[in-house]
Length: 284
Image 1 (cartoon, rainbow, N blue to C red):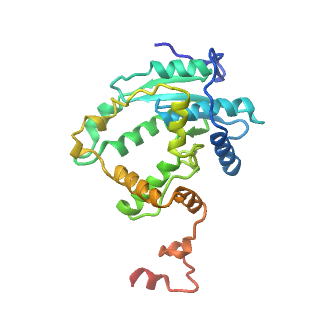
Image 2 (image 1 turned 90 degrees about the vertical axis):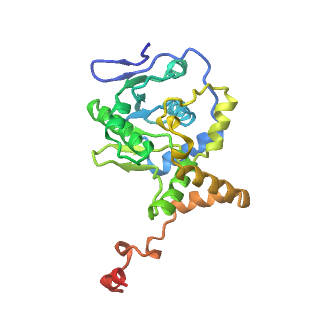
Image 3 (image 1 turned 180 degrees about the vertical axis):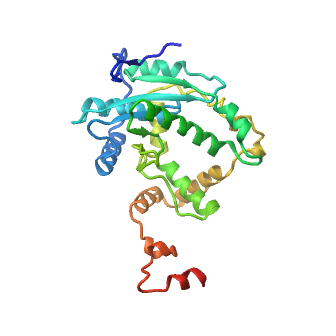
């Protein structure tokens, strides 16, 4: 299969010239991503960014937006889109063709993640978290080896809301997905779509008639229905139900994610130890 990225000897990323008309991204989405980037400084002058491109609707939009930013932003940066294969093959031709059409530098990285997953997954645990960590780890390794300073992921506002609900109800923690964080290995991880709604992404795909292959190779699809993880599905269902009663739900959640009052909870790290006895708080 063809590889449409050209790597110069100095590790420069060179794009192929676009061959067709670029899909149209709505002004609303571009505005949201633009404000997010301006607020959190996700992409900066001189950045070399490795973009995780699974071939799903979210990462396809993110790769498309990166071409817009590359052309119109008042700063220079480079990016490479990369698919991490599980090790069982898959339908990738449409990703090559899409990237070729837009001049997106792209590589397919084949791994043995599935074999490792089968050998090391703990009995009773689900595939998702282990597989996600393995794929993320592969991106980290490549980024460090090849001089990238950031990794771009395509999580959106619905993902952040679902993760918040799952952590709250299943893990006992107030945790979601930040637009930016620095990994322990020093790499920056950015989420430019974090305030974009999933339905806006679906509209982008439908409006531009973009083909997205079903993720038949996802290990979850090989499990019986009663063995598949249910937490995210239940969280999605709950959010849908709440939004039907409150159409401004996701606007409120977006604002809440940026409006924390840590000292209104019971975590002793955020309570003033001079005013209350920390030992007393911890033991009562």
